[in-house]
Length: 211
Image (cartoon, rainbow, N blue to C red; front, side, top):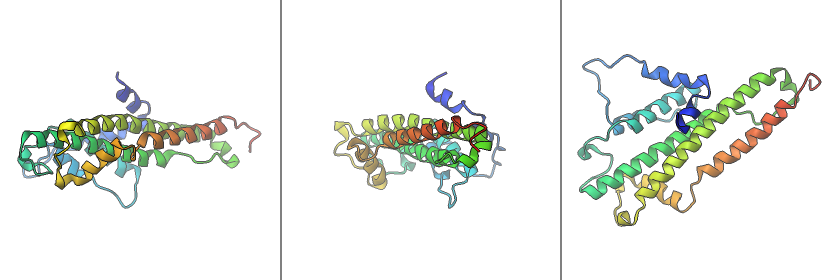
């Protein structure tokens, strides 16, 4: 089992993601989804980031990573040659991994406990379980950060310097920001993990005399 599989299976909570895979197959007249770009378009931001909504987004983004690219004619950028097509694929993969990081951070924040108040002592074990779930989300986000950086580096190779895909300029900007260290999710995630560990230790130190 690789690192990603280990992280994803550390809590039964992530079985909810698999539940989306069990949805009924679309009717013959329905819109048939099979390519990365189609799955990506099913991803969307919610006004309120409920866990179920975030898990749905994670499902669509995971499907986007696993699917094939559509024909360049239907890409999300104007593709006129093989070099543009190659860079487009690298940028797409980087961007989807960044979106997965965001979703896992949203999810982790739903279970994270920012403080260990003394009056929470009667629910010590429940709070520790919640922190474990939050940690799993953060460590999964950390995995996707490594993937995003790898794809960004590919898209920034010297042979692509004068290739700019204007229709996905935001992706181009993300890759540049990663290269310049202006976008660094590893720093953010590690800070969250350090704070989470502090709160965990405070809960672990609680006993029958705490409250």
